[in-house]
Image 1 (tube, rainbow, N blue to C red):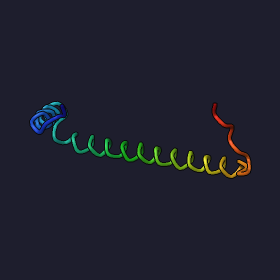
Image 2: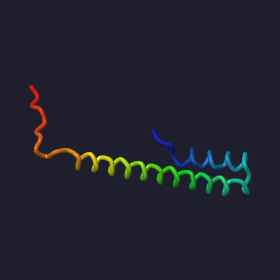
Image 3: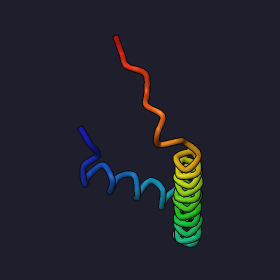
Image 4: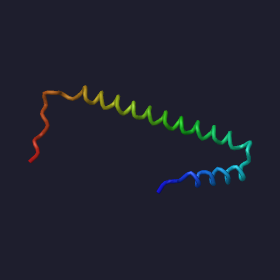
Length: 70
């Protein structure tokens, strides 16, 4: 059950009535900027975690065998 085309249309009409035609483009730009910053922060976090995991892998001695499970 997702949002259909009619529901999106109604939401946009209500937003246009509430905020007016001059405010909507500004709000859209702000929302787009926030989404881009959020994605960028997520990518940076993922890169840091990958880098840390690679550093841990380098520090592990490959000759050490993991314990056998019983």
